Picture 1 (cartoon, one colour):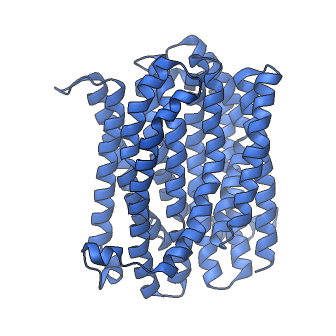
Picture 2 (tube, rainbow, N blue to C red):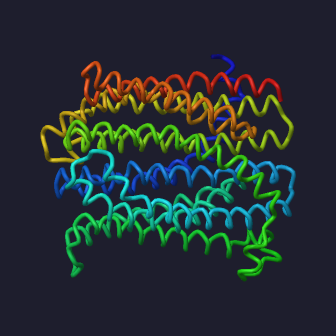
Picture 3 (spheres, helix red, strand yellow):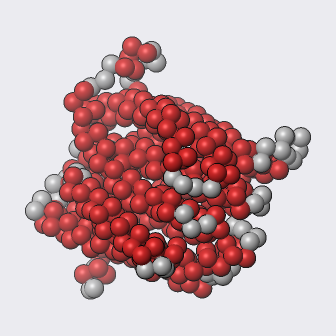
Length: 452
């Protein structure tokens, strides 16, 4: 423990914090769109809230994959920046934006075409009927969100993190305002109910993409990376195949890592839908809160990726290990505090999202379970970020697949239905998967960093 309090580590804590806190707020902004939707739609009714939960089970799955793929740019930019390779970073900007733009369109078309699959999961039909059109509009927002994320990950690789934070904060305030106006029909807006919520989210994300492009294009710090770039279709599609392969070699496994974890929670929504709409709505409330702390921890993960990538570019093994383990220490402290807050306010927090006493009661019990897996959740997501910084993504992807889909979800089914523990049993299984992932990812970083 004395080593973790050494001067070298204290310096890293400060550097990681200064890099991480804007990323934390920015990452939190992505999930806060869903949190705001859940809270405001909860004022309409439980069926509408269950529809948001069901549609978010697929939408969040696609969202985190898109965000994960964009992460492939960040460690490459960080490493090139350490060696002052501006030409490579210029190419990373162009090719990264190309990949993210195409990805946004592909993800929209994919989920738009398969959204009727929600009819196959034995859910309440009134929930499905509301969820499908809601999901389709939310997926349209993937296009501007992927473009935003492409620019964001490039700037974060250069350690410029604050502007993405401010753009995300302002867009979330815009989303809250538009939710208020379009759901309930204030200030002359039509009362659109549930659909008003998803259109509000779409508009706010278009604003995010435009603002981020304007910042990166006109800011003097990035002028050097735009030299020789012409805004023509021919120039846009003239890509560097080798560089695209390098980005995707990190980005696709990173996206899959998120998919395996978030996908487990998304499939849990399906299983919980077999119990009742009340349980589904309660799950969405507790998951929204847990996802908020997760996205905060993922901000530390992103900072760890950049800091570790910088040290890798400098060829410093000790620097890599110090940057990584300082992030682990920070996330343990943060998630420990969140766990305490979950337990202290387990009865109060759900009342912000629902008026139904049964929904509030179930959500309160789930928050206690969420409190106990906070540490595991934080360690595993920082582990993924630190390993991404040393470009180690294949083995961590296998670890997440086994932890969540070979162990966590099957045990959720056993606890929930075979042992008759219901929705709480499903969350016990998910907690087990998180813990296994955390232990092995921490071990993996220790092993890989020693061998640099």
